[in-house]
Each structure stands twice: as C-alpha cells, then as structure tokens.
Amino acid sequence: MSPDAISPRLGPGALILVVGPSGAGKDTLIDLARARFTGAGRVLFARRLVTRPPGAGEAHGTLSAAEFEAGCAAGRFPLWWRAHGLAYALGPEVADQIRSGGVVVANGSRATLDEARRRFARLAVVLVTAPPEVRAARLAARGREDEADIRARLMRQPELALAPDLVIENVGLPEEAGARLSAFIAAALA
Image (cartoon, rainbow, N blue to C red):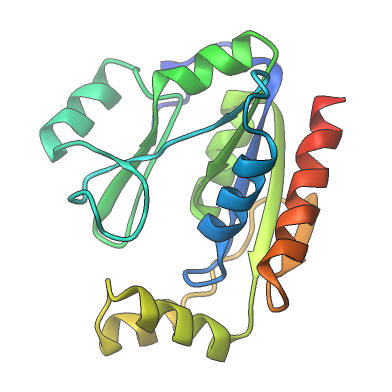
C-alpha cells in the first residue's frame, strides 16, 4: 500500500476496525451492532469490497481483480489489503463519512493495522477472539473452507501492530458480545 495515496490522515471522524481470527464471530457482532445503530446517520457500517463472488456467507461488495487494481492505482480506497488469496478494500464512502466527522465500523485485517494508523487520524481497534475449537466449528458451519483451510486458519496467529482498544472474547451469547461492541461505538460517537 502506498501511504501517500491518501494524505493527510483522514479525520476528524473515527474508524473502528474489528479484527480477529477467522471464525471468531466478527461479522455476527458487527451485524448485531448495525441493528442497534439503524438510522444513526453518524455511524456507517462499511461494506467491504472483496474479490470473491457474492453469496459466500458474508454481505460484501464484489469486485474483480482488475477493478481492485484500478481502484488502488487511482487512490479510490482509503484502506485495502490482501489475505487468504483474496483482495479486500474499504470503499470511498468510508473516507467521506470520516471527513464529515462520523464513525465507520469495518471488519478489517490485523495485518493492515500499521497502514490504518498512518491513514486515519482516529483509529480504534476491537479484537474479537474465541477458542480454537469454537472457531473450528464456526468455520465448518459457514462452509467456505475445506478441512485443510480450516486447519491453516486456526494455525495463523499474526502479531497485532497496535494494542486493541477493546477485546471481546466471543464465547457466550452473541447478543452480550454485540452489546459490548455497541457500547464501544456509542462511546466513539460521544
């Protein structure tokens, strides 16, 4: 990523990146928080753009590899990364929301935290975790990965470039963990 593609750092609003290992339940918690903030114009729940076909278990925007490369080259994406053989990006609406002073909540990548810190004036990191056996069951249930892919995802343990502002151990009722994420978003709005 080229840090000068978007300069100076985006603000005054905040980006809340929800990160964590595959199967921790990030999308579930984001969906619960989204329901809590429906109609709150100052909160945008970013729809990631992914070079994966639609309907793969996640509500995402789809773009081709060529569209992704062209968007990166043109500086259209305020943040982008590659993981698991796919390319991901946050769309231009994220930059617009942050410039207007709002809050954006996005499912992000732990590997992109250094870049996000360079690009956004106000960045908060929420780490969602769960024990390996819980994650394995969730990954198997979503049906996107085969057994070898699941094992590989469970083995990945990248270091966090930033200390998380909130850690959610997502093992109980999803509504309880979703309420913790919602309270964190509400505090960012205050």
